[in-house]
Image 1: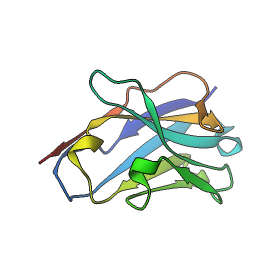
Image 2: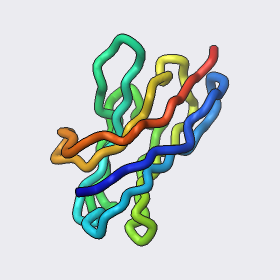
Image 3: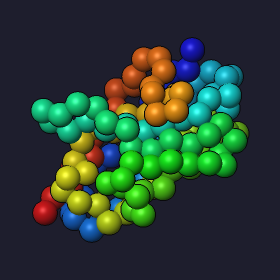
Length: 118
């Protein structure tokens, strides 16, 4: 089972950027497609982006297309989410997880809070 630790969140003004990291433990990390999800207050957790195990092939939710970029470094067991042109509606706790398509697998990490001020 893969264990996950998200980091890199913070408070940023609208239009700013943040880079999230997700460090995974377990030798099978490189076998999984990985995804980022987010949960805003009072809302359900939603899919944000995913990347195939090879690092080639990505998918994004419509609200983040053109602004967010997912990447991974299998040698470091880490997946990243570069977030540019942030909007207040991007405010949420962000989580990573192994995925099957856009369906998360396994348990969640503690997440990292992203707050975008207007």
